[in-house]
Amino acid sequence: MGRAAVRLLLDTHIWLWSHTDPDRLGRRLARALEDPSTELWLSPISVWEFLILAERKRVRLPRRTTPAEWVDTALARVPMDEAALNREVALRSRAVVLAHDDPADRFLAATADVYDLVLATADRRLLAGRGFRTMPNR
Image (cartoon, rainbow, N blue to C red; front, side, top):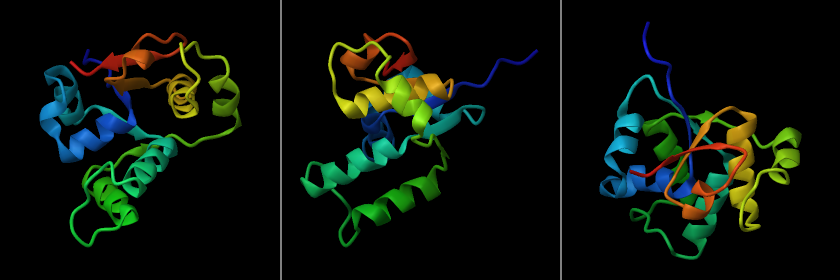
């Protein structure tokens, strides 16, 4: 019997690093991302966070590339399932246990729980949360 596929929801920084700075990914996580049996998921919250980072010039885009074009190119290069933000995720966002109240993190944690995904993250605050599964960047 083969092993079950891992179903990963990428935290925003993991998604960005996988495209712009893969050396920042830990070996275990990098292997999971490269494994064709791994299901890759992305929340629209991560796209939103990326757009904010781009507006604030916190990420470097290739010349003459808009943030929207970067997102389209990234998702064409590595297709991912979209973990839609819905009522169930919104309700669950208030029930996950986090030591902070960052709305984006709450939505990502709730999304992982609602869609039965493992949240791939390097964020210690998310890794310390409860009510959802995580995979640390190791």
